[in-house]
Length: 286
Image (cartoon, rainbow, N blue to C red; front, side):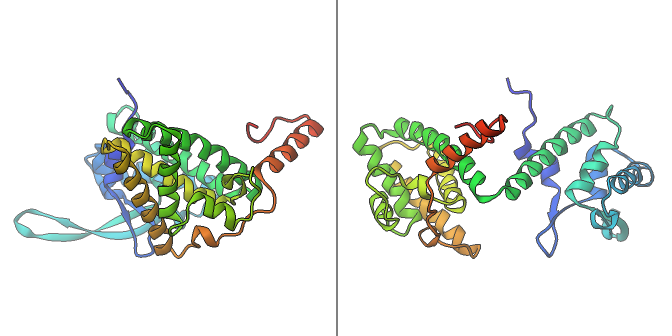
């Protein structure tokens, strides 16, 4: 039995909104109801006020995270009234919930939710701050694990022989790379026969392929797809969808991204030398 909260279906996700600039926020009036408070005035004057004080003490600009707004409150017989509200950033919502009464069951759930979500955001921010070469090492290790899981899902679908897997892999590349197979990508990158294309991808290109692998794996399992042809078609379609997503976001197509001059193996050797010289633990497992 899984005792962890299901963050994908959390009520705190359900009340999350997006402003005109695409920034997420929570209405304090929505939040206080979900948490189980009955009086807005008490919630605002005690819980929100404590959260604003914590924000200030943490060196953050309160006005960036707690923005006064107005919310239309519906009353009986169709009447409505405009009432003062506060738009809370994720950080502000986190502080607000953390300053709630932990003896209230929903408050305790909210504290766990926002603590987990905040930690995920911290990890994402740390990843974004990584220089290119360490990020390449990390993404290359990640895609090895994702491909292993994808191959397990493909095997369950009926992809069995080495030839089957080569065909399955090429369908994914063809979708993502506008028709290019693995051999075609290898030739375009001008690699030696024993060199692998994944070892000569930058972090952005590796990220594109991670997204393709993860989403194909999820679709194969979720829809219980069976048969080699069906699995191949799924990989092709997901690759195309990832490509379309990149296009909609204004990103660079994977085939147009530069090929790094140094392989992953070279970066790993340099990392090993750094570890030996400094006698410090490695940044990533080698």
